[in-house]
View 1 (cartoon, rainbow, N blue to C red):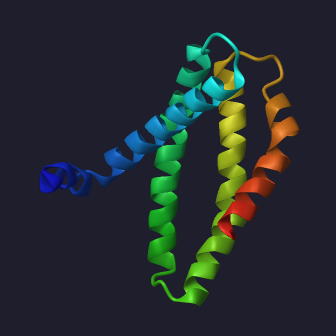
View 2: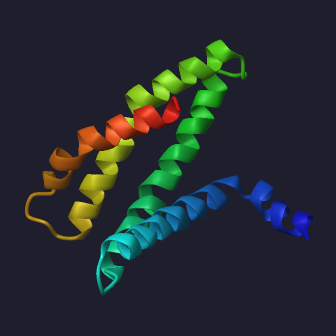
Amino acid sequence: MRDALLTPVRRFPWATNVTLYGCLFAGGDFVHQCFSRKEHIDWRHTRNVAVVAFSFHGNFNFFWMRFLERRLPGNALQMVLRKLLLDQTLAAPLAISAFYTGVSVLEGRDDVLQDWREKFLNTYKVSFIRKFD
């Protein structure tokens, strides 16, 4: 059973990564709405989050991590810290920005940078701190 599940994952790592990102982002949005909203789930927002995750985040992170592993191979402490530094200084701001602006574009907002201006710094700080917990 385990091999039946892992064979496609190993055979199609890109598709697996994109699918996991889309499902995790959509699931995370759904759970967030369950805990913060009173009556109704905004399925349109969940769809928009999934679209951004499927179209950008899954692809970007798959190729970014592959690039890091090829350019900085190994798992020695120094190499891991280099990868972490590059990830937090280059990839994290881009990924956070793509998320907030992408969802805003899909929702048809007049000011697509409003969420980014309001939430970017806090999100970046939290993502940075979480890496060192």
